[in-house]
Length: 518
Image (cartoon, rainbow, N blue to C red; front, side, top):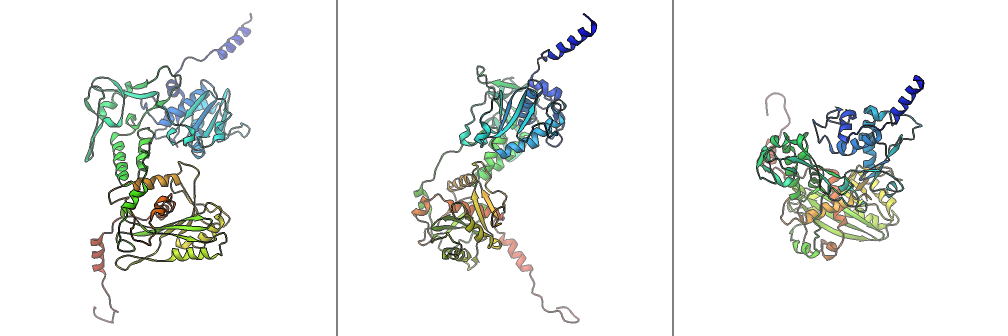
């Protein structure tokens, strides 16, 4: 056989030869590059230096790179929502594909003829499909081999619930060497002195410093809870990160815990998810109507002295408007001021019921010292059959901060979102995360001690806080709460000493005459 023929077959067999065995971490160390725009430490990936170099990088992006380059396969990545999926593609995936040479050779995002889009990337031997868990159509009709599900706790209920993690990030005890996942309950700290955070071993009980534990992270590994299960899920939290100090984790917890005591659990939800890598679980408690009825108190005035601002929420029905005026004091302590219903045909903006609504919103409410207060902001529901009428009403009263609102279909949506004017009337429209708002309201209603977040209700007749009010879904209160969030005013107790001092400094000056000093 001629030498040229031998050389040709040698090259063919070399191409057909299976690649050498390589683990995912070995692939990342050899080929992965971290992008300057999306990583705190851009450059070559180093597993030995930072075993927990970012949850998304380690658990989602590195597997994508591995299967695109080393073991081509159909891949699907699921994010909680379509918006988050697009953000992941633009801010995380595309930079990796661009800056990791072996991936840039396989996925050409610049070519118009490549067939690549934001939500789908095609490469020899497979593809990457990116979907939102809130979009059923994006999850159908895909035959895939690799499924990567990120931020599962934020998925809508219909998308399923996160199961128990199968592989737990475990580190050895500095004293006895026992491998164990780091859990929050074993963290030891003094909230008045966070200079030293320590951790108690779950086996020997010895309490060691953060530095002592992290010195042994290089010997850590993922321990499989169910070795017979072919599915691999990974779980780790920020305690196992070399890029974040335990002091930072504890400080965030203390801040979130302080807010939770005031009825705001949102920071604690975020802390539980992002720092502990766990799913937040609601306690399932409900507020009984009779409990709120018993809470009612006599104000002996129209607006209590502690109130700093007034807002209103308006629920729009086909035959009426239901309105609640709420007073806000320091740290979101609130007082129900008035609940009323205005009946009439509101199908035409020129009908009398709209004028009646405007008259109601223009009235003032009096404090014990005679101070008359106006509404600082009003949110009116634009859902249902009166959408354009609400837009017209609100646009004409923009200077009074009367805004149209609508509920979001996304159960995980932020409470207050940036307003838009993309409607027929060009009115400002705020989209509310209604579920988020109701959760916040329920947490505040559960508070039993007066103070931050506590909800007061008047007992006096004529103010509207009867059984019917407490039997409703509290939509108006939700909208009034959105109104105080929209204007974003400081809800702090006035400094009376400071105000008195400033008042003394005001000197009444007379008219200056020629020559001399008054």
